[in-house]
Image (cartoon, rainbow over all chains, first blue to last red; front, side, top):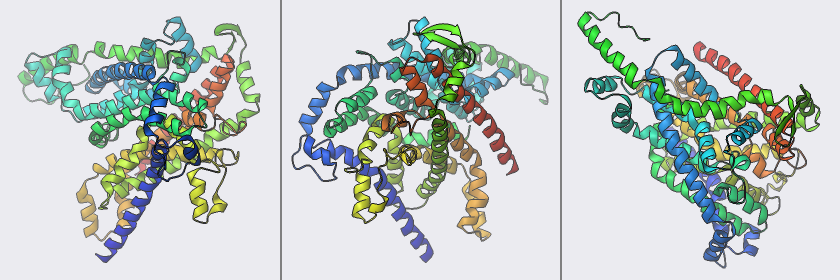
Length: 274
Length: 311
């Protein structure tokens, strides 16, 4: 018992250190976003002597074009995530339920698809030919394509846990096709869907490498891109840069708080057992 | 139809099942339902990836395909003096992040699985940076790693370890390790979560019977945890290496490939060629990355599969 307490104390200590290593940088960003320019330049952990929360956040809101960027980010995320969830869940259902050569092949294609680096120039040429560069629709399709294999992969893992009896009895009750999937199967997928939404939403919202190539013009840019541009323009005003990146991160933080409890269980079912 | 029903004793049951099975296959498990997603994916991911092999052997006038130049674009890439450093950096970044993410990810998962009082907080806090954008994290760390005002050097100096203070992002010798450390800070929570998920499915009675047999913590870890966690360890290794080879955001935001070219990686080379409208070279660099990733995946899958079978 004695030994147990000693190791417990060590573990508590290690855990506290790790928590600090993560929290201090975050605290630093937050507290410095409340300071005026001169104080923020010191980047200290002290509380501000002169609080300029409102003025900083107001200035960022007007200077970095946040309303338009927010609109763009919302359009891209909401539609991309919806497409990703619908297409991936039903594809995974079919891939997992069918046990033939083609479905085995598709499983491998999904795994390869997760790792394929995206090809800048040929994607650019293709998007241009289809008149999709710099359009919402083109970006939504790109995001859908980019996340399709990974989200399909974690759904496939989850279907291993979902007995086929459900499908069979539904068919015997005269329910088939798409209505079987969306009325009976899809509601059973809540935990994994929550995980998939978090992953896809964060991926789209936070994306930098696709938007910097394909969605980077005077009126087509996302919130994440404003952080980068704002950083370039205001690199001496750390208070504003920090306020900007906090504003931009709020939506993902909210989504995370609401869906947090599903993540581990979703990953258990999707990525680990699958 | 793929599935056979031999072994059912009564043929009428067999008929019934066959009927249901037929209905399911035709109406519910129909491949036509997966077509929309698959088509978008094939058109916008597979096709460009395969197409880049074709596009890598041409010259470009603006974004128009020009004349056939054979392997010249590859020659350009390989004779460019930055190329060695960019391969080396990609390798350093992948190796360092792989090691730290897997080792620390597992250690943190085990820590979060003990009976410590802070474990709920520990899990939430460590996962938190995962949800932030790498741009936000990168921008923040340019401030945190600043040689004069950055908190890292300030803390080192205050605790008397001033000798360890460095110019983290401007010293060519360590810049790549600094970027790797930031990436680990941001993403280790994801790997912890994967390991935690894996630990949940190890049956608890295995540990109990090992305890009765007198096995200590280390023995239990080596003989129960590691073998049963092997598939999850492999998943973590794959995710980490793939992410490492494709790294772009963190490098681009933290240093832009600098100082000089000291932190260029393959994907920043793609961007810099693209930005200079050298589309042929950009595509060639892309093809090189594609081939490297695919080879790594194939080799790793073979190797990890073998290890899994051994155990």
